[in-house]
Image 1 (spheres, rainbow, N blue to C red):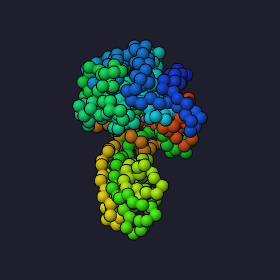
Image 2 (image 1 turned 180 degrees about the vertical axis):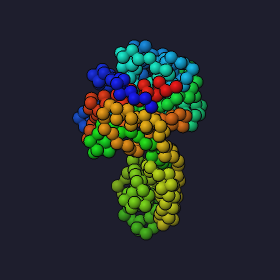
Image 3 (image 1 turned 30 degrees about the horizontal axis):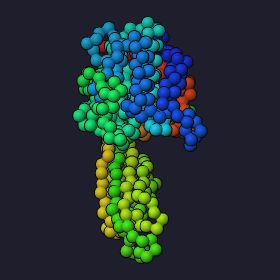
Image 4 (image 1 turned 60 degrees about the horizontal axis):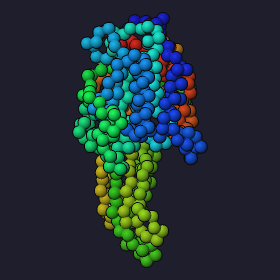
Length: 423
Ligand SMILES: [Zn+2]
């Protein structure tokens, strides 16, 4: 690879920061738990629609050609010299969770737009087209499937299936796309890019602990979501002997405790397990719970150990069910295997960071990202940007400082520039 040390492009940090601060006002709310102003911009809501229009306006201002596909993914192109070559794609998402912050997803999108502006300012022409995208419903909060838009464009989820998904009020993805005017005409299966790079906040403590702003992501760990429903028997709290109970709540609680034991045991590698939803019905003080529904979120950087954890859990629950005389039903909500990122793209990122004089660490991603879907279609990698307070995210406390955001976006800009000039 040629030495481009003298040929580094720099993004405008203030301009990037201003757009981040401007976008966070769309869907802003006052968060009671933290006393901070957060962002609530669920996919395909009015707030999301407004944020989409703002991003499209910025894209058009930067002279980009904007197009929208049938799942509402938005792409903006900066043409290269040879338009017959596959493009270099940047992107992420602008939808948030209900208690979101200003950086999750938006950094990669607004950073991508800033890269385009920086290329314009420097008068740089690239060989290949460069594109920046935002993908629909990455968070999965509203319609129940995360990475929805990127999964559709990667061909993992059929468009028809995605269109029919409903929110809590029964509104479908398709209806909402039409309502907000983002049911685009472009085929959802887009032309295959030459490479994809997603810049994203880390949402964890590894970078800050290492004292660096930048992470080069080696892959995304395996994720398993299941819903477990336990059918016991309601009975009187005072008169029903302990030995003859079929307590759905007790079984659910036992699963929570066993999951923690599994994580602590080390038998399943770096397993992380979370029961984030625990429902035992009406919650009557003097009634044994009849039915319990819990969700189980498992993460593991090793697919074999993930399978082992799932098998152990299934056997444990079966045994509990027999012991307590309850019926259980499993429902698979999501499962993705470990996704390794492309070594060549990681190499471009590390060389770029070196040339910029920015220290970095290599890390696995603990969270799911659009990049894990796009990785099925083209060489893909991610740049992580450090966050404060241990990288806390999905809360208004989420914060990455202007320098870290600027550094990450500089790495993105120069890596994209190098790839876009590869014949
Ligand atoms: Zn995100």
